[in-house]
View (cartoon, one colour):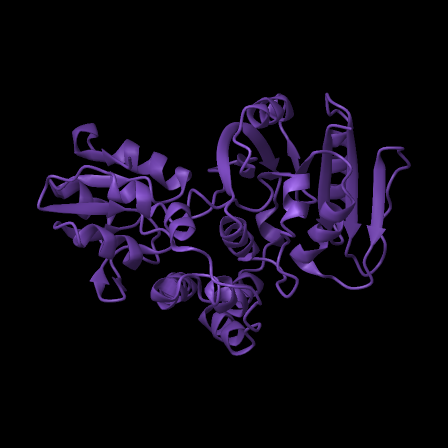
Length: 358
């Protein structure tokens, strides 16, 4: 056994059928563990490599912990019920892990969609949804799991923080590509923002070093509030905040591990010569990055491509629009937002203005 595929599923019979069919084409020895969270059991074909676990209730992302606990392969690939690895992805993943450092807990892949841009976390060092593979033994040895009290949305950040607290990290591997066949008509923004509000504090509280905890909580909440207002689901976010899950147990992570995860070490090593610069892509913790940069001297302006954030006030800072960035001559710092957003900035800003994160 070389790879264990794990995915929770909920009601989407046709999507599950296609996922199982696609996984049957895996070019290396594998197993599939499906966790059925559906109120009425889904129908699965009989395969010696397929195990189906029935959950009496929908446990959301925590269902992945069941698969991780039972996985027999040294590498566990986490999928959604409507996703599958693209040709060559598994071979690339295994080759990458063969040479990865011993303290690399896993790999962040590239998520493609059927049409339009792909998906990625707002923070490049954090995995997103169905685009991650873990070293099974390392995750078990350090008792690393998805947060049991979460449903969906935000669980990737909390688990990545716990990986960093253990002194481990994830590395990007763009050749590990997963196709997410999501149907936008099946996505409820009301539910998404309810869960974002429900989980926001618990992502950061108790694990982030005390001097940064409030900044991280407030920055992510401000981004949610601005985006929710633009999408017309502000009430759902506020309901989630009122029903917030409790803080999760465990000690705070070390400062060095936090700085590595949040890219502060790379930010500190980036040469800066101009008196001002533009942080292109406000990302997950812009106040944190602005404070780090301004301690070194330059004034910092935020810019964002999200129409709910661009042109708005973000915790005391006016966020520049793309047009305002293009009209400016200030250097543009890239590397702190999602890879998808970064590619759009590279297309829109003159190359001589780009400053790359060290």
